[in-house]
Image (tube, protein in one colour):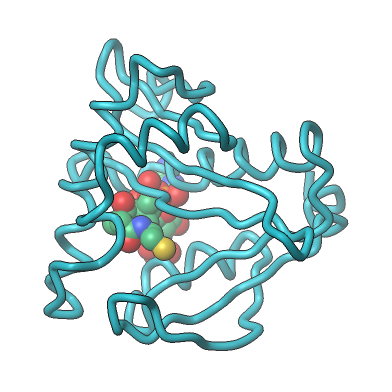
Amino acid sequence: MGMSVTISVATEQDTEQIFKLQYLCFQSEAALYGNYRIDPLVQSLESVRQEVAADCVFVARLGEEVVGSVRGRITEDGAASIGKLCVHPRLQGHGIGARLLRAAETALVEERGAKKFRLFTGHRSEGNLRLYRRVGYQTVGTSEGTDGVPMIILEKPAEAYVATA
Ligand SMILES: CC(C)(COP(=O)(O)OP(=O)(O)OC[C@H]1O[C@@H](n2cnc3c(N)ncnc32)[C@H](O)[C@@H]1OP(=O)(O)O)[C@@H](O)C(=O)NCCC(=O)NCCS
């Protein structure tokens, strides 16, 4: 099944599918924290559209259907912030999330000169933490999301990206 899923740069026409997909995928996170106001659930369609236009946004496709997405952008301190990684619940556990993450990292290094990648995840999201640690991220701190959920901050130097390529 994973074989027929392709990863590519998101286009403007993907905006609505990305918007709907993230709403579906982040329900499990909302349930885990008992908080349905987390950023991916309250983000507007227009805001998603702006990210697709400005950021490094990738989608995983199965035929015409968008089944996964991720975004990345360079922040003020020069680190690349990667976020809203999501895969359709019926297709999780086949490596699509890891492939999307890899695509975002590659583009952020090659097209935007990222020296370091940064990710946030909820402190109780064990599966996410396992995935990020497996591909080389380490905890560097904690923060409180605007939605009140305690977050763990993970980083990986871009050299580690080259070393594991
Ligand atoms: C986080 C998320 C994007 C991961 O996507 P995914 O496609 O399931 O990720 P992967 O398949 O690469 O990895 C997940 C698991 O599948 C396993 N896996 C990967 N490829 C596999 C394969 N071919 N066969 C069997 N298992 C496989 C991985 O080892 C990993 O196992 P683990 O949970 O025991 O560590 C997805 O779970 C999701 O959308 N979650 C909700 C939204 C969310 O929380 N996003 C992250 C915000 S920080």
